[in-house]
Image 1 (spheres, rainbow, N blue to C red):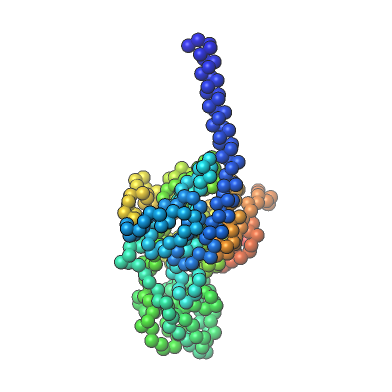
Image 2 (cartoon, one colour):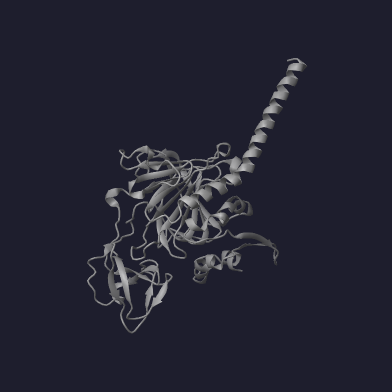
Length: 417
């Protein structure tokens, strides 16, 4: 090759490199604006979304319907709303900054929240290429009664309201209910020993022995494997775009503030109290659970429970092959394999990538929250990192868990000081 041709090839390579760099820089600059625009549109079009509905927030979203006769144009424009009873799944489009595309969808489900607390729901914010696929077959779906049965606690002593029906009475109590209090009840355990009621806007469980005699035949029976639609679900191993990290692929799940709610992800029960996100790690090989507010417990009520404090993450490996999971009937998920990891704190860099969550519009959330600040303070024996939460309510659940020894002391110190 002569010198002129070498020079020509070199200049072509440099030109291509410069073009790629310029395009990447332009995409990087446009990403924050794209995210802000998408979230603003979602907040305008999907505000006050009712329970058991999904909303098309920003382009593009694909819905897979249970009934194949439903026209494809039923859910193809921003602002359109569908009943989740009609859905197998919804999937958002990955970010494409050059085309101003970042799929954003919202969904509100009932999960295990009773109808006695109207309006309460679990929010799903689905972004950037993620899919949420229903894992509850129609014949297995749990339906909770619309009307409650009134029960009354025994007189003479207070009654503990608990987040679940435990054999171990050391499980956190939600409240202490005065004797002789009348309460709405909607569910009972299969063994008939625990009754679910609502007290001061919180659902919880009471031992039947602490209630006055009442006909409970109208209550729904809830066992550990009974789920309402979409309460059990799967997501895809989508990793998002390296050129537009500000517009990631993730599923934010938020229950009512400081209210425990059970969901099932990849057939693993997770109790959230009350904001977490689910995503794949950078190489798409592991599913991550990140607690943003309150507490998450993987495998609750079991000897191998894993408590994930706020500002921490735990992960589990995906199996190598795509398989058919959920109700959609196509092999587009990877099962999880092995065990969940010990929780670790988010790094400063990881918190920075999630910074857009600080700007989520309040009218699409159950409650507003902010990410913690990572502070590397000096201390005896070396630097002691801290995660500082501006809203101390984010730490209420972990404070109780620390008092009971459910969280390692060094983690409690990192969060509570």
